[in-house]
Image (cartoon, rainbow, N blue to C red; front, side, top):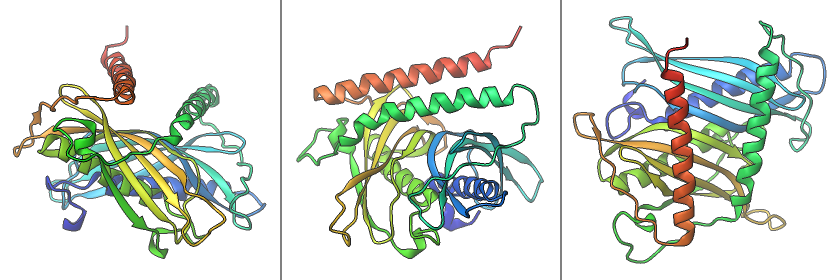
Length: 321
């Protein structure tokens, strides 16, 4: 990892790691989907179920990214990705990231056509059933987020500190050839990196300290973003606990060169950030002040997600009898 991969705190930018994770997932799933004779295809990212940032990666370390297909349905592939960092001076390695991603195979002849996925060979009994349960759970969660696709983040004049409007931020990006696959639509990793940048700006504005990505939950990709589109990435704080904050990020695509298509919601996600001192120690997060009924509702929804994940982590930490 090189200096141009660094964030303000001096560690590797979370968006850079997300992009590496997505590239690894895209490679292994595209290989698998083309492993049998049939119509050639490319695997497109549909959802990132969760990405945990377990430990910071430092500039000068080597990143090892490994990917494994853990489940296939008729039209989708589940990929588990692990990222290890290696200090090449000492040889020390540590696990920095874990992620679960879902891909769908799109025909090279018609990228709007979803093809069937070749079945994977499972290494142990029960693995397929476990994967099927994860598949049904993420499918339900994806359906539950679709109703929010009408949300639009509007600017507010002279907002008060610690309110949603005070830290909300947007970035506008023209999609060029370097952002896209050979087939003319944006790499999922490029979108994820831009989303992380906006979420980081929101978090820094709210805390006015160094911030780092702690996790990413439920990045849903609703539609492809094509070359030449103008995308607007908007973020806002939805919930704060004592030491973390949840940032909702929305991605809208505007096909400015195609008058037949209207602006549409392309992706959405929830990022969790923590506030750090100059010495890298955790700091309290200023508590969010929700003002409108919608903001209060989103705060309670974020609190529910926070408590659910906290209970899950505590359950995993307890020793098994």
